[in-house]
Image 1: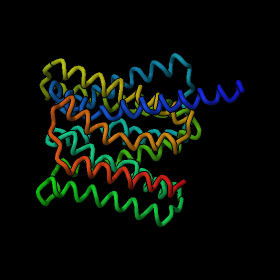
Image 2: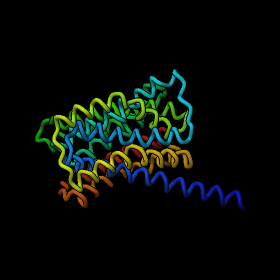
Image 3: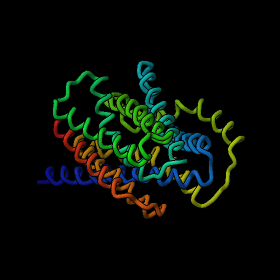
Length: 294
């Protein structure tokens, strides 16, 4: 009985941690929009990454985590290029001209894109149902973006679709590396690995982009650096370890819809009917792919 109770408590705590991770990620786009009120896009990304790297590096040093083997550095570089630099930069550039609601719907395809790249990278053979659902989800998002853009894709849409690809590549490599080291160490070392690029980037960007320190700007920067880039990933990976990747993935299905809620509450955006409907359609498609993979 004691063992059963302990196991149930572990699952409950894991579910809570994974849910907190999803909430943290769902706030990323609104926080980025706030951050852009005080910083330029390049400055915001560079400073965000440096702050997160300082926290991650401190944790790695405090816990005396050994440096990963050389054979893992290429994978960590892919994680850094995709998750630390590529995805934040491309989505931030998109949010200069796109609403967070629009971005949330497009990026809602991320689980599908990651699954597709993972299948190619690892060599798995998903079922026909998986591919049909994945293509249906992609078609729904493409139709939404074309309809919202008046019949043609915008530059912001190009940034968002590019962000999907680089982040999916980073997630795929991160998932592979998480088999040999804890997930938080994967993102921690990826952040540290990017410091030689982010420090010069911050110096150049801050010299060209004006900074206006506002409450929203500072709050947005701190959240994307501490909440989204590091702490959110820590609780997310801990939750996945406790309840398993399939169950954690089901929780992440709510992320685009949560972002739509935050865009209304925090930014005062007005949603079109197409946004929540498309997000719900993508959610259904992702749920089907999850069942097909399982």
